[in-house]
Length: 103
Image 1 (tube, one colour):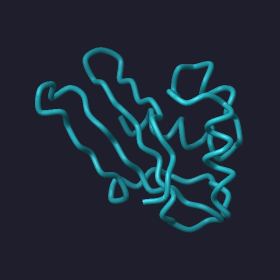
Image 2 (tube, helix red, strand yellow):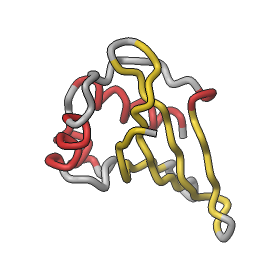
Image 3 (cartoon, one colour):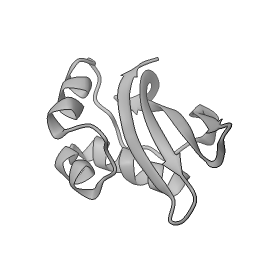
Image 4 (cartoon, helix red, strand yellow):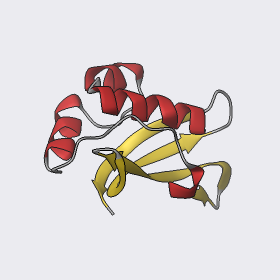
């Protein structure tokens, strides 16, 4: 799951919003991603995923799926900008952006 999240964070930090949408890694459109990121003053920076900044909430009715919230780094430091993703692990692990917001 964290490898898929790393790919998402790498694309966000590189500004490759179109790639996230085209690959299915985002449930948001490119415009929605750009708006959410544009409302925040910092810039998402390249980072190695730190499981301590992740909040994983499994679905009670399906233990192979749930929500993953991850606090991003902006301008090189951990911040309150959070990416919320749905995950599924009943085949190839799928992590998909559902929201970007301030925690």
